[in-house]
Image 1 (cartoon, rainbow, N blue to C red):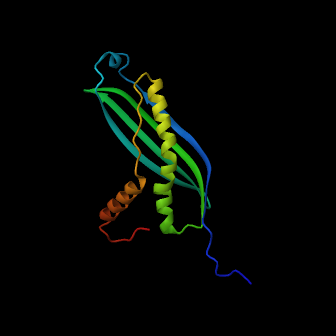
Image 2: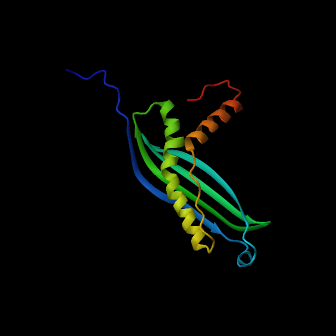
Image 3: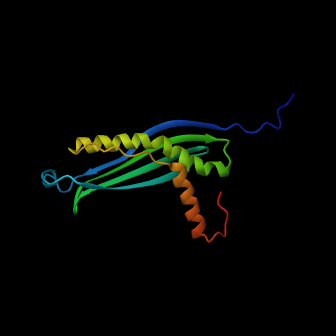
Length: 156
């Protein structure tokens, strides 16, 4: 019996995970080490997707953390964690959440570890970033995009 109506099987694999870019700055050292440590933390995330070839994508997650004490910047750390992912058999509607939520979820623990190591090696108290809900962030991004387009086009 021929298999003519068999739906295409979905395949996902991680080809490579790597740190693409690292930056650690402590512009006010050593003065910052002698002042009272009452930090405020500013945390930002960004993602980028690049299609490398058919069904192969590079997804990059950039984590930026700026820590200040009063008006002085203690340190700034930025890490871009990337991965090369093979994704085959996913519909256009499924690809958005895959590259916008699923892949960043895979990358975040690696970026979190790099940030923690850099901060500790920089002479500061350990910084552990809280988990991130990438599903909610992706949904929020879609909602903002729809509002910017005035709901005139349907997003995939």
